[in-house]
Picture 1 (cartoon, rainbow, N blue to C red):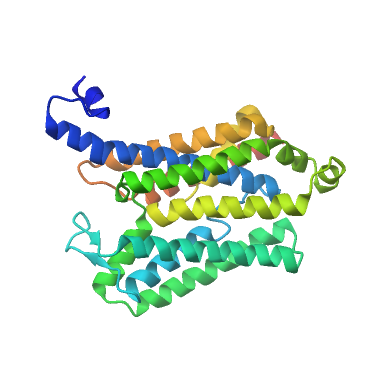
Picture 2 (cartoon, rainbow, N blue to C red; picture 1 turned 120 degrees about the horizontal axis):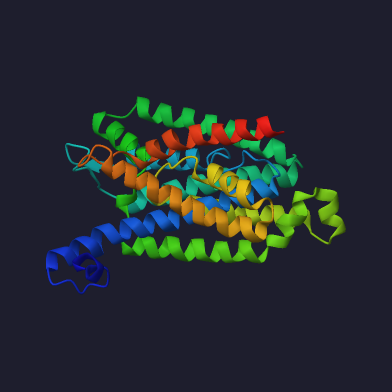
Length: 309
């Protein structure tokens, strides 16, 4: 009861109020908002690109954010203060988030420019994302080569992914972006259903395929970029969540979109729970946990679908 009261700031013990209000509650809400944003954007990307492997990580958005963070830490001097990982604090977290956001959006704009002016196919857009991912990973490695020990540790720590970096201000900002994007996606659900039947069918039903693809790519990229810029690299949520829900509700985006959002939140919450409790009191990096759990799960879904077909 004391903890339940602390959620609304009414606990008798002031310390309980402080811990719940300033540490636990923002972390839980960060996991929910981040999971919803990654899950629903992954679902939309898979629909508009007609590719089951589309997500923010496969399109290079996460890798662009990683390069931006490395650039801010090594070149602009926004590195960490503290001698251990547990006590590590970044000297300018706002600058790191801003650079990560700018670079991740830059990747998205490059892919959009290729699709707009070079008229590449949706499948080629994913391949372009893979190529840009490799390029930005190489650029990040080059930056790390010239970094000192503290800067290198800061970059590695940022790329781990961490739900404890956000406060109420960051949670509110992410929530506004994710809520606005989710509302737009749900209102556009019939366009995604039309695209499932192929571009020609969608055009015959009155869907402007190019406009839908460009606008949704921008919104998905913006949503993923905001989340990744605050939380670091979190893989597989946007890729796995839609596939898990699709096994239950099928391809109707009336149910698939909210299901993917809910599943993304659940996966990120469970990943954070595992990260905090597996070898407590040590908190494992959430990015490693989601990759470690998400990759086998995705392989299971892939091979199960292949056996059935």
